[in-house]
Length: 184
Image 1 (cartoon, rainbow, N blue to C red):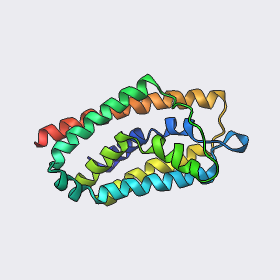
Image 2 (image 1 turned 90 degrees about the horizontal axis):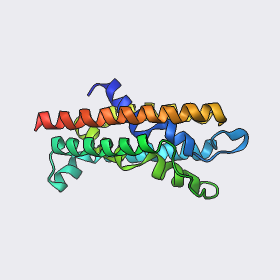
Image 3 (image 1 turned 180 degrees about the vertical axis):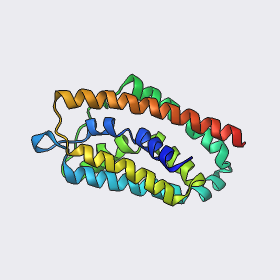
């Protein structure tokens, strides 16, 4: 997978538009900067950790990287179906202060099953550096979206962008599954 396709896969897996709709907000209806940044850094750390541990993890599970890529593709397809059916995340209770970075920003918005399996699959195939670059680029887009105030028009745009990213995740999942099948 090229760097551009990997970045698109991470943009779709993180679904930055859907995530932005669920990030806790502060004044002026913008995302709370510390909460967003802490959640993004936590998610990036988990993705890089999974990418780095992908080889030993797959060996301990006795799964080949190609077979896992097929499973990651199926997981991405199911997650894409959920996003296409429900483009706006459910309202979550927001804890106070830094805990909001853990819940709901890092979990469940950023680190869903589709992101975790894509991290292991891309780490096993592309390596940690490519995974870090693609995930970091996708999360930088989310940080930029955090500075946009939430109003009715941007919300509608974010909902439709969430659907488009869901469709891209569907295509990326099919691509990963086919790529895994061809390599088995």
